[in-house]
Image (cartoon, rainbow over all chains, first blue to last red):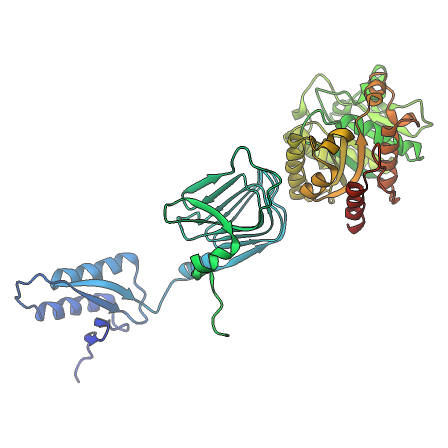
Length: 226
Length: 267
């Protein structure tokens, strides 16, 4: 009986894909990958790097193993690994991913001295009073009045936005940008339904809420419909 | 079984002690049995405002440390027939002399014998504050129409909400100067209540009579002719559950006042 191949190389319209079997042991896989790539070694002097994709199926690879596979492929041929695809993710990764994509709804007033932190988007039904702080990994949407500090995209997401029904913040922070209220702010000025975002010059801009429709199309999560 | 109400503010000098003395007096005037508890250990002055300083023999720390029985430390107010008592704070030690657990036990004991325990809280958010709120069932936050006082009140409300032992705090706005509010040089009542978003239980106008009365050791609530006195008496009646509309300030300012009423009515 012919032994089933653990490593198959296929050319698709997206480029070369290495399929690595997911039922054999990792050591066997590594060995066969090594053999196969060595066997096909050509002596072309041309240093032309070809990007390849690696599909490992239902096998979970740790970060160290991913690195090992990448190095193995890189050493043997003029191939460079573009991406390693796996059908498996760990629970921790999923939890993190879910937390980052979740919109957390909070209904209370963030008072002076209080800090509210969420990993994903924040929808606050209430106010942020002066001296209060809200921090989010993603966007911040405040249905009430923002008078304190709001920090969106805290892990370095420049695309994050802050919006509030009434925008009177003491400070706005997005990613690593900080913007503060002018010292002689006009109290009478109406600041309703506004948003803040980082523009091309890496400055925080406060504008009408509606500009986000064009500037941040990724805020759309609704799929389907007409 | 009585009810313990803590009077607090965060910021100093907004009138916690005056408010405590007057609400206590006004409740006694309504025929309730009241015990005032001064928790500002080391900086006591509720006894001075009440004019009871000379009669202090034992204090709160003596009771907590078992040097005397509660009833020995309580100072009776002679102006009332067995209705108003004061448990004075110690002056020689500091706030760390008492723990929140001890306070809780003390207040619970007092609740057996009195209808209302009014706890005068020290300024700040440290141990003194934690002690004061430990045994309280309700809280009244005092603020003045100043940005700094409102900011501290906001912080205190946050801490009270976090503590969860006291039900939603009520607001007293003290030292209102009507002409400054009207000219916009002072935060107006509406602005403060919207900002703090807790129920308003009383507004007290700035009145020189209050200072005079305090200096004489006679709470203003005893004087029926002063505006501030009426305001304190109304607060007491609202604590008792009566629904009394807020007294108009000097001259009727319909627009502002209508809004307050509306706000009050909605909640």
